[in-house]
Length: 566
Ligand code: COA
Image (cartoon, rainbow, N blue to C red):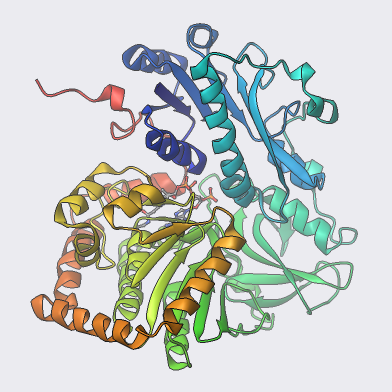
C-alpha cells in the first residue's frame, strides 16, 4: 500500500511504524502537519491509499479524510478520548491501558475502531510507557487494521459497540492544578505518580528555594528520610526531597518555569548556588544508595553495566563515569561485559542540553566528543573480555556507534536505531564510526547509512551487519536471554580462542591503520562543525533543544517531495 504518515513530529512511535511498515513491503512517505494546505498538497503529490496519524496535534481536514481513509492512533483504549490520555492513566493508577486505531471522522478520537490492543500498566514515566508499551501495542493494532482494510472483509466497529467503551470516556486536557504537589499530604508513591504523569512533557510544576521549576526524572529513595518537602541530599545530577510518609524521592532534571527559552538541565546544575549546605551521597556502582544512573552487577563471570542516563544523553561527566565503571568491571573476575544502557535508550550521544547551557557550546561540544571517544576507545581496546552492547532501548547518532564499539551488538526486537549524525546540522560525527561502520557493514553500506538519515529496525540492522543478533520483544526477557547467551559464550570450550582471535584482529587492524588516525580525521571535521564558519550544527542544536517546529518536512522523509532527476 501507499501509506502517508501524517505527524506533528517524526517521534519514536512514527519512526517505529515507518520501519515496520517498510519491512512489511508498504511504500511510505511522511509529512509534518504544518497546516491544512501543506497536508492537502502532500496528499495530492503522493496519492496515498491510506493515511496514518500516529502523533497529531491538529485535526485532519474533512476534505482529506472524506477522500482517503485516515487511521488515527490514540494512546488509550476504546472510549477514551482527549489529548492527555496517558497522563490521566498514570494519575488514575490504571492497571491496564491500551491503544486504539480508529478511523478519522468529524468527532475527535470518536471514529469507528479498526483495531485495539491492551497492556498492563508499568510503574514508570509517561514517556517510557509511550516509547515501550504504547509503541508495541500501536504497531500490532495498526498492522491488524491495515490487514483488515486490505482484505476488504471487515468494517470498523462503532465505539459504542465495544465493551471497553463503557469504562472509558472523554478526558479533558490536563492542567497543572490537577496534579499539583502537596509535600505535606502526598506520600512517596503519590508524588512519583504525579511527576511521572508529566515526564517527558510538560513536567510537573513545583517550587524549589522559592522559585518555580518543572520536575522530571523522579526515583524512589530506599532509606533516606527527613521533614516533608525538605531537600535532604544530592547525588550526581539529582536532589533528594523528603516525603510526608518518612520516605524520599530523587529528582534528576528540572526546567525553569516562566522562561520560554529554558530547557531541561540537571537539578544540581540549576540549583548549584542553593545546595552548598546539602550533603552529597556518593553513588557506588553496586549499592543502591544515591542517584542510580550507573549500576553494576556480576552474575557468574559476566559483568552487567546498566546505565540509564536521562533521555540517553551522555555528557562529559557521564562518559567519564561509565568509562571508569567499565575499567572497574575489566579489573574484576569477568570474561564478558554486557553494556545494557537504560530501559528507554541505550544512548543518544552527546548531551546537547548541557552543551546548549554551557558558556561556550563549541568548547563544551569538543569536550563532550572527546569523552565519548575515550569511552568508545575503552570499549574497542578491551583485551581480555568479550564486550557486548545489549540494546534494550533505542540508540541514536553517536550512541549507535558507541554500541558498535563492542565485539557484539545485540538488540531487543523493536529497538530503533538512528545511525547517522547529519540531521544535527550536518555533524560529521566521531566515536570511531569511520572505522567501525565500514568494518561491520562494508564501505558502500556505510556511505548509504550515513546519507539516508532514516531510522532503522533491527531486522535491517542484521541484514547489513550493524546488529549481530536480535531477540525478544519484552525488555526483561531480552535482558535475561542476553545474560544467558553471554554466560554460554564464556563457558564454551573455544572461549580462549575467541579472545585470542579478537586480539589478533585488533592488532591487524591497528597495523593497517591506527585508531588514532581515524579519530584525528573525524575530529578534524568535528572541529569545523564546532568552531568553523558554518553555524549549521549550532543552529540545529538550538532548534532541537528549544523544540522549534520544523517549517517543512525533510525530503529524506517526504519522498513525494523529491524532485526526480531530469
Ligand atoms: N541530548 C540531549 N537530549 C536529547 C538527546 C541528546 N543527545 N537526544 C534526545 N534527547 C531528548 C530530546 O530533546 C527529548 O527531550 P524531551 O524529553 O524534553 O522531549 C527526548 O530526549 C526524546 O527525544 P526525541 O527526539 O523526542 O526522541 P525520538 O525517539 O523521537 O528521536 C533521536 C530519537 C535520537 C532520533 C533524536 O532524539 C535525536 O536526533 N537526538 C539527537 C542525537 C544527536 O544528534 N546527538 C548528538 C550527536 S552524537
